[in-house]
Figure (spheres, rainbow, N blue to C red):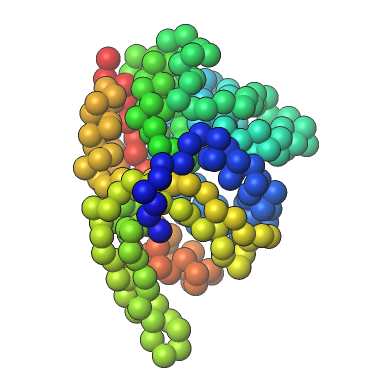
Length: 262
C-alpha cells in the first residue's frame, strides 16, 4: 500500500534488521526461488567476466550475491545499512573464506569512504527499490567507479509491480490473468513480507518508480544504458517448478547494465 509519510533511514535499517534471520533462512533454504533461479542468475550474467575486477556490492544483505561474484573471481566489498544483515554475511564468510570484505554503510555514502576510480563495477541486487534516495546511490556509484566502469543492478519490473496488481484466478485457483492499475502512483509504499515460505513475517519500506523515472535518474547521474534485460525462467525450469509460471508469462524483474559515461 502507498503511504504519504516518507520513512527515514532509521526505519529502513530497523526493518531489515528485524527481518534478518527470516531473510537469511529464506535465501539459504532455497525458498526464494525467484532470486535463485530467475533474477539472480540474470544479474550475474549481465555482469559478464568479473575475474580480477574490484566490485562494490551495494545493499549486499546477507551476502548472497557478493558470494556469487567472489566465486567468479571478483574482489568484492559488500555494504549494507542493516548491521544484522552484515552479521549473517560475516558468518557465511567465516564458513567459506572467499576474501569478501563487508561493511555496515548506507550505499549513498560510499563516495565518502573511497576515492574516485576505486571500483571496476558496482552491483545491486533488488536494492534500489528499497531506497528513497536511489539517485544518491547512483551518484555515489558514479564517483567511486573507474572511467567506463559499470553499474549493474536489478529491481522489480515497474509494469507488473504497480500500486494495484492482483491475479484473477479460475475456480481451481489457477492464475488466469494479472490485473494491474495505478502505474503512475509511485513513491513510498510498504512491502509486506508475508509469504508462507518465510520463517516469520515483517514489513519494510519500499519505493516504486516508473520506467521514465528510472531513465531520468540514470541520465541525471551521468550513466548511459548499455542494455536492459527482462529475465524469465525457461520452459524446463517451469516444468520443474510450476510456481515460476507467473514470471514466465509476464516480466517480474528488470536488470539494468549501465556504464559511466565520463
